[in-house]
Image 1 (tube, rainbow, N blue to C red):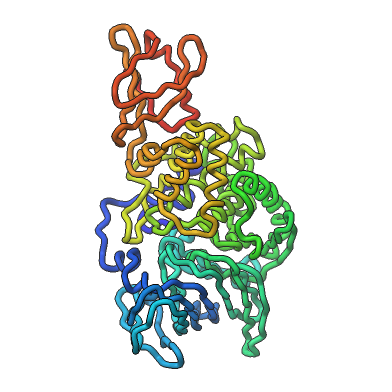
Image 2 (cartoon, rainbow, N blue to C red):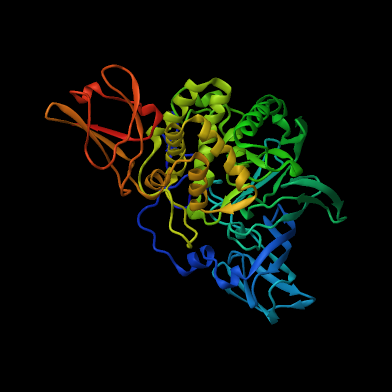
Length: 544
């Protein structure tokens, strides 16, 4: 997830860095451009993309691209006009359908294409969208979107792109909305012949164009998010391995080959853990790749971007300050976790990006538990409490291409930790594995996830989800001495909030109490006699 306005950092040295999160500078005023990007208008909902063939040449000297995208789609309803998205700084050269050039109108990043006749529902159409230009350059990828044009230590060209949040349409024309993914895709990238392109999926072929360029043809056989589509251009060294029947391919700068062979050993333990807890890797047909990039990282489907400098932790730092975070490579674990949560299971609207980031943040602690045990799991997940800002709700406004609070990472992960404590490990892990299974290669909403969690665990968790996702405050357990006894209640925003919680009294025995918004009495004389299992929940405790 990218940052468009301001950054907050969490690092061991007084910086506090949220790996790709954002804080807004104040209330956001939404514009017509925001609506065009974020809303499923009639011009977007009338067609369903089934296949893209992106075929472009990348001029690394001019830092420009040119080519076309074939957009194949099924018609959902009758129409004469559709919307395709391409940033205004990119040139539309022409749009062709059945051999005819179509007229179009541009408004901000939207391209409205007019057909000469009414296109009936239940047909399949293909148009070819020719375009060219110099795509936006990222100032600080991956937190802002765009291309990165740089050199490796040998002085050779090294190019990457990250566009989540900013939009895939910053560099290629598509329906730039997360609700519509092609069923499959061909990515054809022509680069100078002394370089290599690595994109998503499987390499089908290479073609010498006899003009100083070589075209790399990559095929993605699964649905793919538009923002996951990637190019990685360099003089890469390549090595490969296997995990069960899954092909593992690694592309790294030549000078880092020996370091990569050691650091990337963590991939197999990651896959073993995540397949145990989340189910099968979702893209066996397309393989798993880890590709060195000139930016920190990104969850590009089957082509995970890696720029963590071959260090454990987050660029060598422990984001949790627990001592656990530097036991593993943050980027390998976090970005690969997105293959299940974000790439296979995708939120329809980016307002629900917590579905990507909360589950993936939690996957880091799951990995710590797999590798180092339950106590390190507790240290790691609780270490994130200090980094939550509680600045605004995690769920953002719908229909305007706007994310919610960056707390979707740490607070969202802690919410899942809290739910685990409520329902118990057996039901929780059934639910956790069930999400990527139930919603395999689908786009979903918050309610889809909440309703499924309720059904799978047999517990109504709606109030818990809503308190953490829709409100800024976390629940506060109030303990108050009244007439020689301790009384307790929840203070929360959700009406009827009644989350159970584990406490121990003077007898040291743990028990579950069920606070509500109404005062209830405990068999304790002072609040000091009440111990709350705060390491199992993300709550405030107020004693008075």
